[in-house]
Image (cartoon, rainbow over all chains, first blue to last red; front, side, top):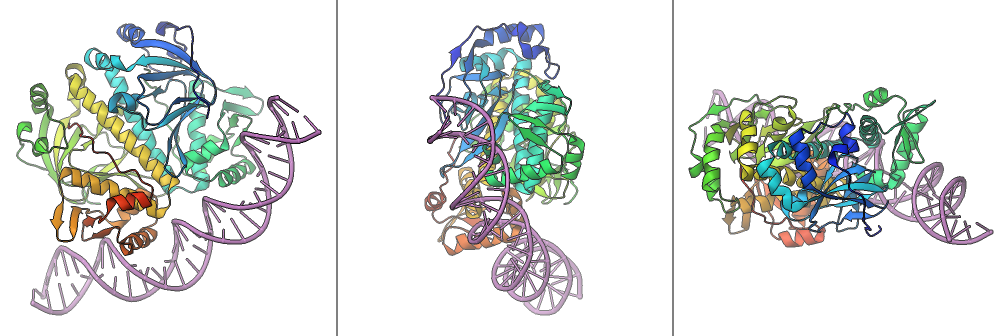
Length: 255
Length: 255
DNA sequence: CGTCGTGTTGAGCCGTATCAAATTCCGTGG
DNA sequence: CCACGGAATTTGATACGGCTCAACACGACG
C-alpha cells in the first residue's frame, strides 16, 4: 500500500468534463453546471496503488472519479480486508466523511486515477441552494446502499460460482455502459485491472478458491479474464445458469 | 408472511412525538418541527408478521418507525432470503423508493408497529425548502450505507461465533440506547423478538449452525437469549474475545 | 539471471450445511 | 385448567464446500 502522492493537474472546466458527454450520466442544467464550477476546488492525479483515503481519517475533501479504477475497502481487527465495491469513473467518494465526520472505509487507486476535488465546506451551500444537486447526492447514497444490499445478499446466500458470476456481471455491464470496452475478433473485452485477491476479498472467499472457481467458469466458456481484461462471451447464459438478474441500465447523476 | 392490514390510528402531533424526548435522537428546531407537522400525512399501525412493503412495489409512502420492531430483507431467485438489517424505532424506511422509483427490498413487521407516514410527493418540498431536513436525510442514507458495509465485512470475513456476537452487540447496544431495556436481578435485558431463522438469514448462516453457535456463547456465559429477550452479561469481554469494535453512541437525526 | 509478485494446481482438513428426529414453547379451544 | 397442535428450538449424524498449506509456473523487472 503506497502513500498517496497526489499531483495537482490543470483543472478542466465542468462544461468540458468528459463524463458529461457520456450518455450513461444525466446532463447538468445550466444552473447546475454553474454551481459545480464553483463547487469544484481542483483536480488531482494519483498513482496506481496509492491510498487516497485511509480509514478513520477526517478527510476535508470529496471526490468524483474522472478516470481510472479503484476500490473501497474496510479492514478488520484480525487483519482481513473486505472490499466494499469497485470504483468506476463517475463515482462519488467521501460522502460519509462529509456527513458523519470521519471515514469508515479506505479508498485506494488500482490504476492511475484522475479525481475531481470538492471542498467539504461547501456541502451546506449545496444543500441550501441547490435542491437538484441535493437530490443527486441523496440518489447516490441510496444507490450505494442498494448496491451494498445486493452484495450482502450475494455473499450471504450464494455459492462460490454464483458469487464470482455476479461480480463479473456487475463489472462487465458497468464498464460496457461507460463505453470502456475493446472489441476484438473474439468479442467484447472490458478493463478489469484488479487482482484475484481483490475479487476474493470482495466476495468473502479465499484466493485459492476464487482462482479455482474462475478456472471452472473459463472451462465452461462463460468467462475469460487475463492481463487486466475481462470478456463474457454470453452474459445472458451466465446470468441464467446462476440465477442472477442482470443489472438495469439506469442513467445516473453526476456530482 | 401475512398481508398488510394497516389500521389508521389517531395521529399524534410531532411536537408530542415520544421519540423526540428520547435523548438518543437530535431535537427538532422550531422550523423543522413546523415542517414535519406538514410533511407527516398520517399514522398507521400494522400487525406483527405483516409485510409493510413488498419488493418491487413502487410505494407512495415513506415511514418513520414510532414503535415496534421489524426487518428489511431481500429475496433471491433461488428462494433464499437475506435479512439486510433489523429495524428499530426512529428508523426511516422507504428512501430508496422515493429516490429510485421502486423498492428493492421488503419490509416486514416483527412485532406490532406504529408507523409515521410521509407522502413521497412532498420529497421535493423537503429538498427545496428545508436544508437541515435534507441533511438529515443524507445523514440517514450515509449511515445506512455505513452499516451495510460493516455487515458485509462481518459476513465476508468473520467466522460463525464472531458473526453472531457482532449481531447481538449491535442489537443490544441499539436497544440500550433507545432505553428499551428491562433491568432484573440478573442484569440488563433488551427485547429481541426475532427468530433464530431471521438471525441466520441476516448472517448468511444455516439455522442449525446459528443455534449451535448461540448455544456455545450461552455455555460460555456471554449471551443469553430466550423468549424474545436478550442479555449480554459482559459486552466488553464478548467484543474483546471476538475482536469486535463496540458500536459508537452517536445521536441520530429523526425524520 | 535471480527475484518478486501474481496466478495455478493438488492434498488434506475444518467449518458449516444438510438431513432427521426430539423436545420445548405457546396459542387455541375444549 | 388442561389437552392439543403447530411453530420454534435443540441435538446428533453425516456430507460437502471452501480453507489452508505447499509447491510450482510465469512474466516483469532489476
